[in-house]
Image (tube, rainbow, N blue to C red; front, top):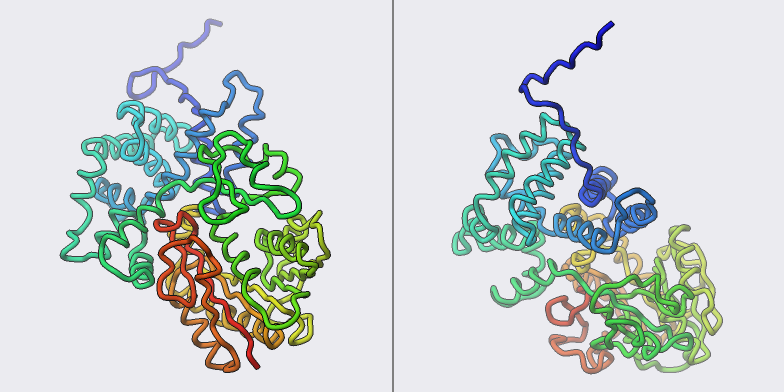
Length: 475
């Protein structure tokens, strides 16, 4: 029996199997994980990259592929708000009616067209091929049509079309131009104060890729040792900080693998150093980190305490995070203890400590450079959920320190509702306290404001937007 000829497809064209692009497929998988599972890109991406590099297929996934995949994921997440405004102008339905996987593919394409140097034809064709693989031919045609509209102008031209004029609506204008939710723009502007120039510098800094910063843990490693690494330069402010100016893989550094050094933003290091350097009345033997997970500040505090013969108690409510704290502190040169406990229901007696740090849970608006997806995930009503916990943790910290001791209240958010409002409310309830001027404890760091508390900023200090208030118990 003779073989029957294959029927042509309705278009009359022979079927062509879509080409699988491992870089763009990986980027799409990362974006879907962020969207579907509320995952964070900095946790999702490394295992995906590691798996791709271990693949022994014909097309080896190399360092350039990893760099492109990383840029596609983080760039798309940072500029999601701007790209949404552009895509909305190019589709014939509300953006909420576009299936999320389709929107992720469109956003990846928009970033290639508007945020990279990838040639237009390559950006469109590669994204349409991705759509054929992960969405199917039908929806790939929709993706193709939308991307061809986007390709008709550059980013500046699109912003001029889709952003309201600054004079008519400053916050909405800045939200579209700099890809932040309007409420975040408003909150940051209130915290920063000043005019247009400062807020635009801050929003731009939020969209820049942060350098990797290492900390040399005292007594175990030195900054000089870390400076032997390629493209390593000293930190700006912390004597223990080293910056990797060309990225790099921290896990490839011996001191990091051994736990003698770690990855830690310089703002986080400054918070620990300021608390450790605050003047005390009386002994200096017992320190507490009351919200110790995941362990960066605890490891630095533990090392500093060991140099003075003091002990550190690191307390963390979540068991898995307590495990991370124990890992960070393993090998500390002095005595320490890690416990799983609720900081609002202390497992220790009042007045037990000379120094106490509470780096409280917060919205994370100070770390948008590192977690760009957080800006889209957070909502204004999240502040109400954090408020009781933040106040409760600070109250417990003040009850846990002895008279003459010092408490450091820290948060990785510049939102006034999470910083000064919390401190002011709690100090009204506990009157025998004094705010300590934290500025002299950050020597050489400029632009620290009027004090006595300190707010760090990405655009001014190159750090996360860490907040610190130091409080002495006087009675």
